[in-house]
Length: 196
Image (cartoon, rainbow, N blue to C red; front, top):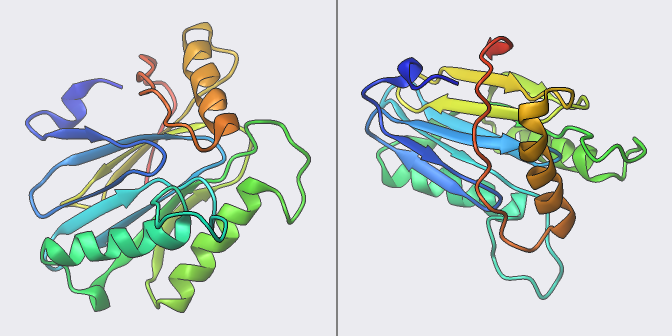
């Protein structure tokens, strides 16, 4: 995706376990497979942020890691509030939960569990969801503009030869689950960008 789309704005990339929030205009990028990213924004203060989590919860002995949705959501809400957001005004956009590893679809699988967790958490916390793009079979590259709440979403097609390395890296990171993934470079093709 061409940097002209966010010219003049700082770009931060997050990966599994990442949380980012800012009161200054900026862009947050991530690449999602079965993971979910929640973007939160206070439309009054223009504070926004994003997380990227791998599973809804960890085991009993797991630390409070943002790799797990239960911690990632609280960390994101708190990060937004530290930047000046009012929790009562937050609104959400939710992305990811793709079946990119081609595992059988059922209620207990990772993508579906991540989606259900995110939707249930936001409903419980009374944070309205203003946009979502969930499920399916393709990885997503997401760019979130913290000030405006605008999202550019690009589906990464497995058939594109230049995207194969990106997809291999993404699959490796998700299969390794607890190992820290390497940064995934952005594909060059802008032909299938969706605005949310």
